Picture 1 (tube, one colour):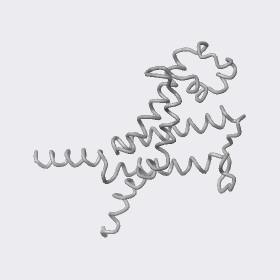
Picture 2 (cartoon, helix red, strand yellow):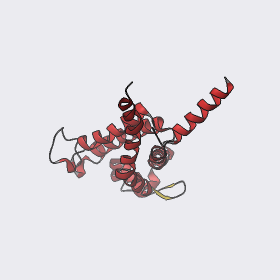
Picture 3 (cartoon, rainbow, N blue to C red):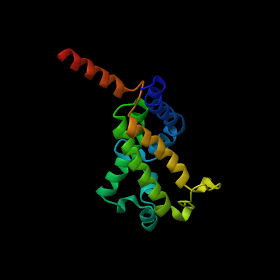
Picture 4 (tube, rainbow, N blue to C red):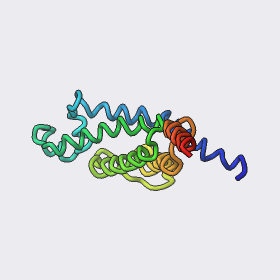
Length: 174
C-alpha cells in the first residue's frame, strides 16, 4: 500500500467527527435540552416534538399520555445528548454513528409525517430551495455517519486509544 493510500482511513473519520462537532453538535444538544424540564422530567415541548399530532389532538395535555410516551421522549432526549458526545469523543464511534443514523431517520419521518402541516417536506435531490426540504440536508448528515460506521473513530479517538492498549496487551501476552 502506498503511503498516500493510508491517509484517508486515518484522517477521514477525524475530519467527519470534527465537521459533526462544528456543524451538528450544537443543533442536537440544543434540541435535546428542549425535551427536559428536569432530571427524568420530559417537557411539554419534548412531547410536542416527538408526538406532534397526538399532542395536538389532546390539546397539549401531557397527563393524557402514558408511560410509553414518557419512555420515548426520555430515550429520544438522552440519545440526542449522548450519541453526539460519543461521536465527538470517538468512543464507541461506529455504534454511536449507527444510532445517530437511526435517530435521524426517525427524526426525518417525524418532521415529514408528524410536522408535515408546518411545511416540512421530503423534497427531492438537487433542489435549490432546500431550506424547507430535508432530503438533501439529511443525506449529508447520513454521509458523515456512514463514514464513521465504516471507518470508526479514526485518529485522535478514544476508540484508537483502547485499540492500541488492547493490541499492546495482546503483544505482551504473546
